[in-house]
Image 1 (spheres, helix red, strand yellow):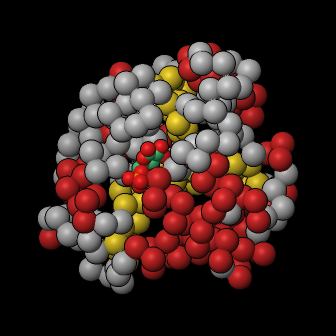
Image 2 (tube, helix red, strand yellow; image 1 turned 45 degrees about the horizontal axis):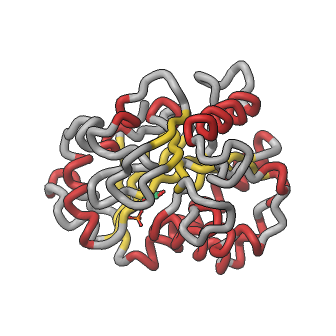
Image 3 (tube, protein in one colour; image 1 turned 60 degrees about the vertical axis):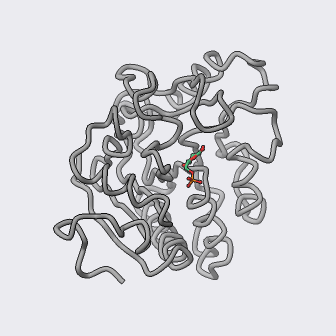
Length: 260
Ligand SMILES: O=C1O[C@H](COP(=O)(O)O)[C@@H](O)[C@H](O)[C@H]1O
């Protein structure tokens, strides 16, 4: 697993634009070398900010959208089309305006879908979908995602893995149903840390002063049970993309001198 690297941008708008530019390059490179790319999307303000910035970037046309697999790190277990669902927000921010192959858009199940209100069955079905997409050289039953993005919550949660909750302790399953989430809605579906760690690159996004404490805690040696963001690492790269407000409580020793 890779050690965290930090990039700090002036403000959240620049952070979103820079992350979008980075994502375009990463997808284009992966498509050039393997023929396709796979990206795991995150919900939340920062994740949607990156998607909106990508939608507005002229270079988005460099991506071959039909050869891109999209997955989700977590989902709020709500009916299809609910405005609070991460996939609904992603569609509005970007997905409805680019020519994706619908078969390669792997949304997590909704609470009015084939599994009804059974969130455990929904989680298991998503794990099976991931396993079907994995090839033998991948690790542990999930594809080796090219980029997996995670918004960092003010409590250090990533995906729907909350501090001290059962989901963050999961070591076997790749996807779990989440009950009693401290952030509404209470029922969710989430990738686990083992699934997250199968990604080639993990990008953690945090902007705003309300994230400063979480960023400092996760990067200052906290354990992953208390600070789930601390356990999110990529196989080749772990990148924290921050704005100055989110980086404001980092110890000076961690603050990267070259960021702008
Ligand atoms: O509920 C969620 O929150 C986190 C963080 O969201 P933010 O608005 O504080 O950036 C998000 O990453 C996750 O996907 C989402 O379901």
